[in-house]
Length: 307
Image 1 (cartoon, rainbow, N blue to C red):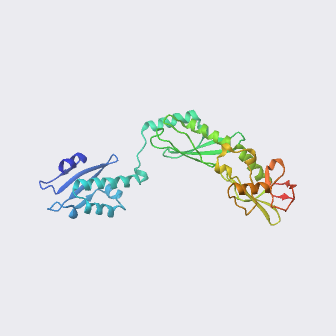
Image 2: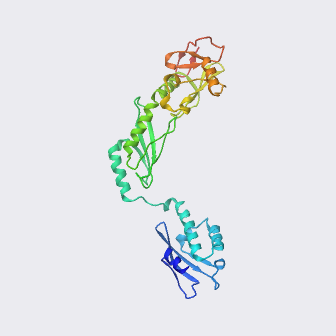
């Protein structure tokens, strides 16, 4: 036991011949903590006492019960010290101020990539240089934001990316990838959604939108007023099923009457029969059966539809 203890904790020494008193340091995540262990004469851990430095005591706050339990259950001091170091590692990783700082090459790599991408595209960066927000503009002039959370081993580890999109943001990343390549992939995703957003923007500008009150780029549903005590709800279902890449102009605004629910192909076929052609700019909108005949003559205003 003595050799194993010294091997794993070279800074923790016995202070008496009976080896019932140990004092020194244990190292966890490259940090040293002062620890004193006082064993009873029989050497059993059940009656042992621990004395910690204030830094160790602070990290172990909330883990006191776990430490006492490990002290009662461990077969020997070597096993207990190993268990204690595991608890310490968990406690350290849960404290933001104790997280490991990226090496200097992380910052030089980040600056180099930002110079290639262009500092003008950087909207925000936090004090830890981990979270970035990059702006992007699609071919129609719409402004978008790409949130990027870098890992400490960047670029070896893929960053976490998010954006206000109606489809999942799938990014390809390798250890050789850069922020400029990431931004280019994001622009391609935006271009695949341009026609979809054009249809929704036209509907938003020429109809009375009831829901959502403030549509975002990720919203695929609209509820619009079409007359006295009448409204119409529609959503793009195929953009969820097969993604933006397979969407056609005819699918861009597939509409279902308010209160109806899609239930596979049969419901889509039923909804298709309820569709009626309207002005080309509004694509295909559906009216409740038997209400307006074959066509809906619509005069569009920013906040009202006149029949």
